[in-house]
Structures are given as structure tokens and as C-alpha cells.
Image 1 (spheres, rainbow, N blue to C red):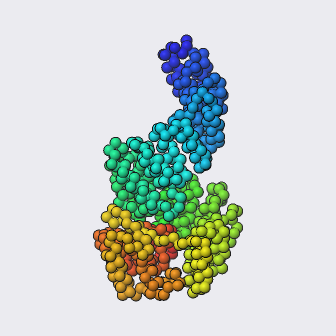
Image 2: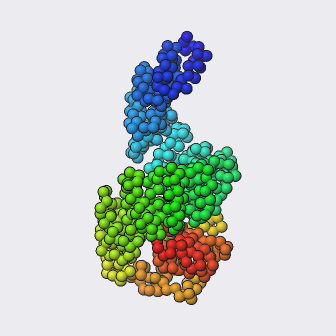
Image 3: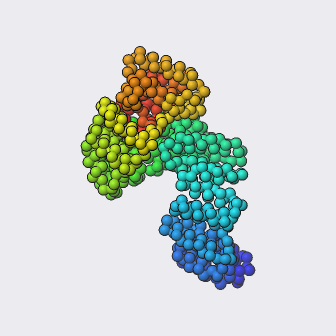
Length: 591
């Protein structure tokens, strides 16, 4: 028999596709050699692919025996190598195969060569070089598959502008391409400042996608959409996505379920988050992490600990994130002993070495509770070098509890690690201001000026009637600006009637008291609240997302506003949620 017998060829290839061991593969390979099938590209590509999944060295042996491998065979092996379970170990092998392609004068790379290679790029520079090769060998006529792989590469390294440019060049993007760009907006954020604008871009892009009747959202689309809603606190859009899942019977798997839990938690709807969690047919560690984290940021430390224990009874082993969210939950409500036990269990029960983020949680836990000296000792006794996050946590604790000595030490380390981060200077400046050390405040402010550093402006998002509105401190750009400031004046008068005295200690020192009160009045969350009081239904909760920590004066005034106007006000600041109702806050002034 030989390769001209189509029936025998079909049987041989069928056997090949069913091979599950290297020995059976070798037997079929022997048959292919005797029948001449190894002289044909397609059977060879099947053989290479299957052998690479069973034993990569054997696949290379086969490949090296091929006299003149085609680019199709090279592409098959490169793709197989990169898709292998030991991808990190085999990346160099993939690029060495690509190098052989470049040296071979008889073949050229084609559009199937590059997508796999872009997945394997270990650095931004490697990807840029590969992009240059795309232009050299394919010109500008490469297909959407290559364009999408380029898009994913640039998104991976935070170049969202380039990724969006590449996306816009695709005439008729398919679902996978839309998903690539939407997911890029979810994963390509490089700083907190970008988070809001990037999430807004994701919502706008999804709106564009809906205009195409041929493209229907799937799980990946909805997870990207829900994640953007979570970042923005866009509850209405998040609910729409959840309804879409239910309406079109999209499978509520771990992936979608975790995204919905996270979204409802971050939009201030903890009950809905738990309904999703409780309704999942199966839960993995990611689902538990999202729910424990939700309990934590809303101030339900005991519930978070209870769920942490329940998870362990489900035979799920906590991962690094589990320990972080559980310790954070303890930190937000002062469960110091319980949080320390969780930290100790990392090594004592689970045999793992605590990582930098776990020490960060421990420092925060002790610092918030006023055990600043102990927190400093733990930080200095760490087996690894503390990063800026840990020193900033210590500085924040020192500010809250008035430990100036520790605060100054922390700032010295922060200036070495992050000389251009404004928040570090502001924390110490506020500490000096709180004890009337104005010359030191002046010195810190001058230091900021000398380094060309400006304080990050506070911004707040509020959702009214399904639309997101953003405000900056002293913002007068909103179309309803006159009504907003009129409402602010009314709110200020009513606060005075209830005996509120503005806390001006942390406002800039070089303006008089009246100006300081005005500065507080125009904080971004005050503008957002005033707008919601004017523009939304009088019974609807007011939901606000703030990029910075809520200041003490805004916290006190918001408690009173919730009582005066009979409105539930839910604020998510940089650290946690505050549920204001009837003159009280869920944080019990511990934040």
C-alpha cells in the first residue's frame, strides 16, 4: 500500500488522531513512513502537532528529519510549542524555530506565523521587533488575525492607545476581536488615575458593538462589560448585563459569576452580590475570594471570616488572594487578633511563606488599630525589603494616630522609593497641620513644589438615571452647575442649623478659615451629592465612587446630609465603602 490509497490514508490519520501514548504514536508514525504519508504536508502537520502534545523532544526529532519543511510545518510546530503546558520553558525554542525560518531562503513567514509568536513575547522590546518583521514580510496587507494578535500584545504592555488604533483599522471585527479590545480595557490599566477613563472607554466600545446586529455578546464580552461597570460603580449597566445573561441563557460559570459578584459588591449592592454567590451551582476559589472581598470592603469582617472558614470545609485551599481579602476584611473593622491568626496560618497551617502583600495587610491591620510601633517592628523584621505600599500604609497609620516620629521615618523611605507620588507628601503635610506645625507643613509643600509634584485632584462619579456624571473639586463644567451650587449653598445652611462645624485642619494652611470652609464645600463628593439631590428621585439611594480617601469633614457632613434629606448615600472611596443612613455610617468612624 502507498500514499495514493485514500481509504488507507483516512484510516491511518484516524488512528493518529486517537493516539494517547507515545508508543502508539510511534506505531502509526511507522505506518506513515512505509506508506509514504510523511512526504505530504498535512499528515506531517498532524503528526507534529500530536507528538508535541505527548513528547515535545520526539516532535523535534521528527521535524529535524524532514528534508525541506514548509512554512506550514514550521507554523504548526511553533504554535504547538507555545501552546504546550511548559510554555515559559519552550518560548526560546519557538523563537529559535522562527530564526530558522528567517535563515531559510526557500520560505517566508506568513500571516499564520506571527499570532503565536506575539503570545510568547516576553518583553515589550521583543514585540516591537516582531511588529517590525510583520511590516517587513507582510507589508500592510496582513489579515485581521495578525491585527488582533498585535492588538493583544500592545494591550498586554499597557499601550491601550496603540491597541485601539489597531482595532479601529479592522473593517469588520468579529466577536473575538471585539472581545480582545474590551478585555484589553479591563487588563491594560497601568494606574489608578486611568481606571475611570479606561472603563468609560469600555462602556462606549460596548455601545458601538451593540450597533452591529451580526455580533452577539458571549461570556467573555459580558465579563469585560461587567468589570468596567464594577470599576465605575455603574449599577444600571451592570444589571443590564446580568439580565442579558439570564435572558439568553448564557452559562453562569465561575468566570461570569465571579465578575457579577465583584460588580454588585463594588456598586454597593452586597445583598445582590451574595444572591449571585449563593445561587451558583458550583463555586471555585475565585468566587469565594470575590465574596469575601465584598464583605470586607463593606465592613462585614465577621461575615468574611465565616465565609473563609466555610470555604475550607468545601475542600478549597486558600490562595494568596484569599489571605489578602480576608486580612483586609479584618483590618476594616479592627479584628486584629483574628487577622493576625489568618496571617500566621499561611505558614503554620498551609506551609506557605507569606508574600509582600500579606505583610502589607498585616502592617495595615496593626496600624489602623493604633498599634503603630508594633506595625513598624513587623515591617522592619520582614524577610524581604518593604515596598512603597507598606511604608505608605505605615505613614497613613502614623497620621491617623498622631505618631509623628514613625510618620517622618516612613516618609523618608517613601521619598527614596517614590519621590514623585503626591499622596506621600500630602499625608505628612496633613499630619503636621493636625498639630498646628505650620512651618513643617510649609516645608513639605515647598518640597512638593521643588520636585514639580502636584496633588492628585479628587474626582467623584455618581450614577443618576443610568448615566454616569463625573465631578472634580470646584467643578463648574457640568450643564447643571448653577443648580448644583445653589443646592450646595442650601445644604451648607442646613448643616449649620444642625451644628456642623467644618474641620479645616487638613485644608491648605495659607488661606483663611472662611476660604478653607469653601474649599471643603466644593470637594468632588459634595458636588456629586448636590447633583444627585437635585436630579434624582427623592427615594433613590445616592451612589458615589471617589478616587481618594474621604476626608473627615466630608465624612461628618455626609452623615448629617443623609439624615437631613432622608437619603441613603453609598460612597466607595479608595479604601472601602461607607453606607450613610439616618446620620450614621457603616464604618463607625473606623476607616
